[in-house]
Image (tube, rainbow, N blue to C red; front, side):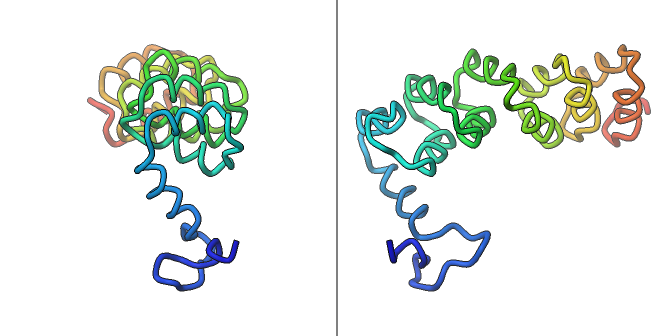
Length: 168
């Protein structure tokens, strides 16, 4: 418990900085076997939320771990899965459509740099998500061209103020 209040250099943790406990978990989890990671993902052990959140961010894990985490009810876990490029496409697509993640989708659409994610978001039923895709400087020209076909003013306006929009 006391280690949770100190960093790696034995300095007190400050707000906004990863505490020693999270750092320990990161190092510890990297060293564990596939079976142990899967047990955490499946909640066979009472893994704290931080562990599942970190697992969702980790790259290079077996697909079944990502698939198990897809069923988590912690929105931070789900958000990390969406932004993890190693998560299977079918899992990410199902997560895109979760209504509970609406606010996070809007934030992701604003900063996403993954073309697959941007394509998915550009077809989202929520105009606010499409609007953020149109304003995102990482959105490829082809997606912007398709968004230009919309007759929704907020989407067109955001796209017109995007410096990367071709032939502005």
